[in-house]
Length: 256
Ligand code: SAH
Figure 1 (cartoon, rainbow, N blue to C red):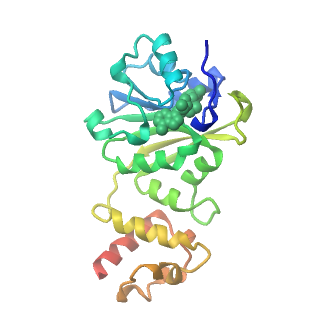
Figure 2: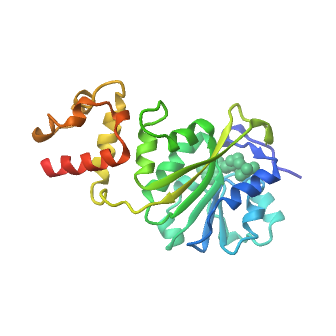
Figure 3: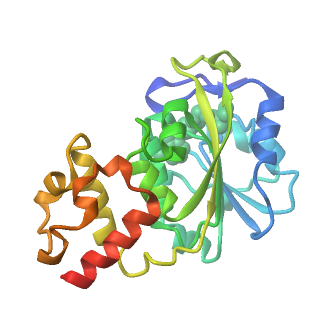
Protein backbone atom coordinates (compact mmCIF):
# COMPACT_ATOMS: atom_id res chain seq x y z
CA UNK A 1 0.00 0.00 0.00
CA UNK A 2 1.20 3.49 -0.72
CA UNK A 3 -0.32 6.95 -0.55
CA UNK A 4 -2.11 8.27 -3.64
CA UNK A 5 -0.64 11.68 -4.51
CA UNK A 6 -3.16 14.49 -4.14
CA UNK A 7 -2.52 17.61 -6.12
CA UNK A 8 -4.43 20.03 -3.86
CA UNK A 9 -2.13 19.03 -0.98
CA UNK A 10 0.98 19.70 -3.04
CA UNK A 11 1.99 16.06 -2.84
CA UNK A 12 5.10 15.12 -4.80
CA UNK A 13 6.86 12.20 -3.17
CA UNK A 14 10.64 12.11 -3.26
CA UNK A 15 11.83 8.76 -4.59
CA UNK A 16 15.61 9.15 -4.31
CA UNK A 17 16.92 7.78 -1.01
CA UNK A 18 20.35 9.41 -1.39
CA UNK A 19 18.80 12.84 -1.72
CA UNK A 20 16.51 12.16 1.25
CA UNK A 21 19.52 11.23 3.36
CA UNK A 22 21.45 14.24 2.14
CA UNK A 23 18.63 16.58 3.18
CA UNK A 24 18.43 15.04 6.67
CA UNK A 25 22.22 15.16 7.05
CA UNK A 26 22.15 18.89 6.29
CA UNK A 27 20.67 19.62 9.72
CA UNK A 28 23.49 20.48 12.09
CA UNK A 29 21.78 18.62 14.98
CA UNK A 30 23.79 20.51 17.55
CA UNK A 31 21.60 22.69 19.64
CA UNK A 32 18.23 21.08 20.19
CA UNK A 33 16.48 17.87 21.07
CA UNK A 34 13.30 18.37 19.10
CA UNK A 35 12.79 18.31 15.35
CA UNK A 36 9.53 18.94 13.51
CA UNK A 37 9.12 17.58 10.00
CA UNK A 38 6.51 19.40 7.93
CA UNK A 39 4.64 17.31 5.35
CA UNK A 40 6.27 13.88 5.85
CA UNK A 41 4.03 12.14 3.26
CA UNK A 42 5.21 8.53 3.21
CA UNK A 43 8.18 9.24 5.42
CA UNK A 44 11.09 9.28 3.00
CA UNK A 45 12.86 11.85 5.24
CA UNK A 46 11.23 10.66 8.46
CA UNK A 47 12.95 7.29 8.46
CA UNK A 48 16.39 8.93 8.47
CA UNK A 49 15.30 11.46 11.07
CA UNK A 50 14.17 8.66 13.37
CA UNK A 51 17.76 7.34 13.38
CA UNK A 52 18.93 10.59 14.98
CA UNK A 53 19.16 11.30 18.67
CA UNK A 54 16.28 13.71 18.84
CA UNK A 55 12.56 13.62 19.44
CA UNK A 56 10.81 13.68 16.08
CA UNK A 57 7.44 15.34 15.51
CA UNK A 58 5.54 15.40 12.22
CA UNK A 59 3.00 17.90 10.89
CA UNK A 60 0.84 16.21 8.26
CA UNK A 61 -2.73 16.95 7.15
CA UNK A 62 -3.37 14.06 4.78
CA UNK A 63 -5.32 11.29 6.54
CA UNK A 64 -3.96 8.63 4.19
CA UNK A 65 -0.36 9.71 4.87
CA UNK A 66 -0.96 9.74 8.61
CA UNK A 67 -2.33 6.17 8.49
CA UNK A 68 0.64 5.11 6.39
CA UNK A 69 3.16 6.68 8.78
CA UNK A 70 1.51 5.13 11.82
CA UNK A 71 1.63 1.71 10.22
CA UNK A 72 5.22 1.95 9.05
CA UNK A 73 7.01 3.85 11.80
CA UNK A 74 6.42 2.40 15.26
CA UNK A 75 8.41 5.12 16.96
CA UNK A 76 5.90 7.74 15.82
CA UNK A 77 3.08 7.50 18.33
CA UNK A 78 0.04 9.70 18.24
CA UNK A 79 1.54 12.37 20.51
CA UNK A 80 4.11 13.14 17.83
CA UNK A 81 1.59 14.09 15.14
CA UNK A 82 0.74 17.77 15.21
CA UNK A 83 -1.63 18.28 12.26
CA UNK A 84 -1.71 21.34 10.02
CA UNK A 85 1.58 23.26 10.22
CA UNK A 86 -0.06 26.58 9.39
CA UNK A 87 -2.40 26.28 12.37
CA UNK A 88 0.26 25.12 14.79
CA UNK A 89 1.31 27.27 17.74
CA UNK A 90 4.99 26.35 17.97
CA UNK A 91 5.39 27.98 21.35
CA UNK A 92 2.58 26.00 23.02
CA UNK A 93 3.48 22.79 21.28
CA UNK A 94 7.22 22.76 21.90
CA UNK A 95 7.96 25.17 24.75
CA UNK A 96 11.67 24.89 23.98
CA UNK A 97 13.59 25.10 20.72
CA UNK A 98 12.55 23.09 17.69
CA UNK A 99 14.37 22.65 14.40
CA UNK A 100 12.25 22.38 11.28
CA UNK A 101 12.80 20.18 8.26
CA UNK A 102 10.78 19.14 5.26
CA UNK A 103 10.26 18.57 1.63
CA UNK A 104 7.55 21.16 1.88
CA UNK A 105 4.19 21.43 0.13
CA UNK A 106 5.07 24.07 -2.48
CA UNK A 107 1.64 25.68 -2.51
CA UNK A 108 2.33 27.10 0.97
CA UNK A 109 6.08 27.83 0.69
CA UNK A 110 6.08 31.49 1.63
CA UNK A 111 3.55 30.93 4.40
CA UNK A 112 5.93 28.36 5.89
CA UNK A 113 8.87 30.76 5.71
CA UNK A 114 6.89 33.65 7.21
CA UNK A 115 5.69 31.39 10.00
CA UNK A 116 9.28 30.45 10.84
CA UNK A 117 10.24 34.14 11.03
CA UNK A 118 7.27 34.78 13.35
CA UNK A 119 8.54 32.06 15.68
CA UNK A 120 12.15 33.21 15.44
CA UNK A 121 12.69 32.79 19.18
CA UNK A 122 11.77 29.10 18.99
CA UNK A 123 13.32 28.00 15.70
CA UNK A 124 17.14 27.88 15.63
CA UNK A 125 17.44 26.11 12.29
CA UNK A 126 15.50 24.98 9.23
CA UNK A 127 16.48 22.71 6.37
CA UNK A 128 13.99 22.42 3.60
CA UNK A 129 13.17 21.83 -0.01
CA UNK A 130 11.15 24.42 -1.91
CA UNK A 131 10.53 25.10 -5.56
CA UNK A 132 13.91 26.33 -6.83
CA UNK A 133 12.67 29.83 -7.46
CA UNK A 134 11.56 30.29 -3.82
CA UNK A 135 14.81 28.79 -2.54
CA UNK A 136 16.71 31.25 -4.74
CA UNK A 137 14.65 34.22 -3.65
CA UNK A 138 15.22 33.35 0.00
CA UNK A 139 18.99 33.17 -0.51
CA UNK A 140 19.30 36.09 -2.96
CA UNK A 141 21.83 38.93 -2.64
CA UNK A 142 21.28 42.65 -3.40
CA UNK A 143 21.17 43.96 -6.98
CA UNK A 144 19.68 40.74 -8.38
CA UNK A 145 16.22 40.08 -9.71
CA UNK A 146 15.53 37.47 -7.05
CA UNK A 147 16.36 39.85 -4.18
CA UNK A 148 13.17 41.06 -2.55
CA UNK A 149 10.88 41.01 0.47
CA UNK A 150 11.44 37.32 1.19
CA UNK A 151 15.25 37.66 1.01
CA UNK A 152 15.40 40.66 3.32
CA UNK A 153 12.88 39.51 5.92
CA UNK A 154 14.44 36.06 6.22
CA UNK A 155 18.09 37.13 6.06
CA UNK A 156 17.60 39.79 8.74
CA UNK A 157 17.08 36.90 11.16
CA UNK A 158 18.70 33.85 9.57
CA UNK A 159 21.84 33.12 7.60
CA UNK A 160 20.70 31.37 4.43
CA UNK A 161 22.69 28.71 2.58
CA UNK A 162 21.55 27.46 -0.81
CA UNK A 163 22.65 23.81 -0.56
CA UNK A 164 21.72 22.06 -3.80
CA UNK A 165 19.25 21.78 -6.66
CA UNK A 166 17.01 18.75 -7.15
CA UNK A 167 15.74 17.60 -10.55
CA UNK A 168 12.00 17.09 -11.07
CA UNK A 169 12.41 13.45 -12.18
CA UNK A 170 13.22 12.19 -8.66
CA UNK A 171 9.64 12.83 -7.55
CA UNK A 172 6.43 10.91 -8.04
CA UNK A 173 4.57 12.57 -9.65
CA UNK A 174 7.25 14.95 -10.98
CA UNK A 175 6.54 18.62 -10.24
CA UNK A 176 6.64 21.13 -13.10
CA UNK A 177 9.69 22.91 -11.73
CA UNK A 178 13.08 22.15 -10.23
CA UNK A 179 13.55 22.22 -6.47
CA UNK A 180 16.17 23.77 -4.23
CA UNK A 181 17.28 22.81 -0.73
CA UNK A 182 18.23 25.61 1.65
CA UNK A 183 19.35 25.89 5.26
CA UNK A 184 18.41 28.73 7.60
CA UNK A 185 20.60 29.23 10.66
CA UNK A 186 19.36 31.76 13.19
CA UNK A 187 21.66 34.73 13.69
CA UNK A 188 21.53 37.19 16.57
CA UNK A 189 19.15 39.88 15.37
CA UNK A 190 21.07 42.79 16.81
CA UNK A 191 19.83 46.10 15.54
CA UNK A 192 16.36 44.85 14.75
CA UNK A 193 15.14 44.38 18.31
CA UNK A 194 11.96 46.33 18.91
CA UNK A 195 11.87 47.56 15.30
CA UNK A 196 10.48 44.47 13.59
CA UNK A 197 7.13 45.97 12.64
CA UNK A 198 8.57 49.15 11.16
CA UNK A 199 11.30 47.13 9.41
CA UNK A 200 8.69 44.96 7.71
CA UNK A 201 6.69 48.02 6.63
CA UNK A 202 9.71 49.72 5.07
CA UNK A 203 10.87 46.56 3.27
CA UNK A 204 7.40 45.81 1.92
CA UNK A 205 6.78 49.38 0.74
CA UNK A 206 10.27 49.63 -0.76
CA UNK A 207 9.91 46.49 -2.84
CA UNK A 208 6.22 47.15 -3.50
CA UNK A 209 7.36 49.33 -6.38
CA UNK A 210 10.80 47.97 -6.90
CA UNK A 211 11.63 49.95 -10.06
CA UNK A 212 11.18 53.24 -8.25
CA UNK A 213 13.52 55.14 -5.99
CA UNK A 214 12.76 54.84 -2.28
CA UNK A 215 11.77 58.52 -2.19
CA UNK A 216 8.80 57.41 -4.30
CA UNK A 217 8.04 53.89 -3.15
CA UNK A 218 8.11 54.86 0.53
CA UNK A 219 5.57 57.65 0.02
CA UNK A 220 2.84 55.23 1.13
CA UNK A 221 4.39 55.51 4.60
CA UNK A 222 4.80 58.79 6.38
CA UNK A 223 8.48 59.56 5.73
CA UNK A 224 9.93 61.46 8.70
CA UNK A 225 11.09 64.97 7.76
CA UNK A 226 14.72 64.31 8.69
CA UNK A 227 14.93 61.34 6.32
CA UNK A 228 13.61 63.03 3.20
CA UNK A 229 17.09 63.89 1.97
CA UNK A 230 18.71 60.66 3.22
CA UNK A 231 21.15 59.19 0.69
CA UNK A 232 19.10 55.96 0.46
CA UNK A 233 16.12 57.95 -0.85
CA UNK A 234 17.89 58.18 -4.21
CA UNK A 235 18.31 54.41 -4.40
CA UNK A 236 16.03 51.54 -5.29
CA UNK A 237 15.15 48.91 -2.65
CA UNK A 238 17.19 46.25 -4.42
CA UNK A 239 20.37 48.31 -3.95
CA UNK A 240 20.14 48.19 -0.14
CA UNK A 241 21.79 45.40 1.83
CA UNK A 242 20.14 43.79 4.86
CA UNK A 243 22.38 45.89 7.12
CA UNK A 244 21.30 49.03 5.20
CA UNK A 245 17.64 48.22 5.78
CA UNK A 246 18.30 47.60 9.48
CA UNK A 247 20.22 50.84 10.03
CA UNK A 248 17.72 52.80 7.95
CA UNK A 249 14.89 51.47 10.11
CA UNK A 250 16.72 52.63 13.23
CA UNK A 251 17.26 56.11 11.78
CA UNK A 252 13.61 56.25 10.80
CA UNK A 253 12.56 55.29 14.31
CA UNK A 254 14.85 57.92 15.84
CA UNK A 255 13.40 60.58 13.52
CA UNK A 256 9.76 59.77 14.27
N1 SAH B 1 8.10 14.77 2.51
C1 SAH B 1 7.41 13.88 1.58
C2 SAH B 1 6.13 14.50 1.00
C3 SAH B 1 6.29 15.82 0.32
S1 SAH B 1 4.77 16.36 -0.42
C4 SAH B 1 8.37 13.48 0.48
O1 SAH B 1 9.41 14.09 0.34
O2 SAH B 1 8.08 12.54 -0.24
C5 SAH B 1 4.20 17.56 0.76
C6 SAH B 1 3.45 16.97 1.94
O3 SAH B 1 2.95 18.06 2.75
C7 SAH B 1 2.22 16.13 1.60
O4 SAH B 1 2.30 14.90 2.27
C8 SAH B 1 1.02 16.96 2.09
O5 SAH B 1 -0.06 16.16 2.55
C9 SAH B 1 1.64 17.73 3.23
N2 SAH B 1 0.95 19.00 3.57
C10 SAH B 1 0.29 19.85 2.74
N3 SAH B 1 -0.17 20.92 3.41
C11 SAH B 1 0.23 20.77 4.71
C12 SAH B 1 0.06 21.54 5.92
N4 SAH B 1 -0.61 22.70 5.91
N5 SAH B 1 0.59 21.07 7.07
C13 SAH B 1 1.26 19.90 7.09
N6 SAH B 1 1.46 19.13 5.98
C14 SAH B 1 0.95 19.55 4.82
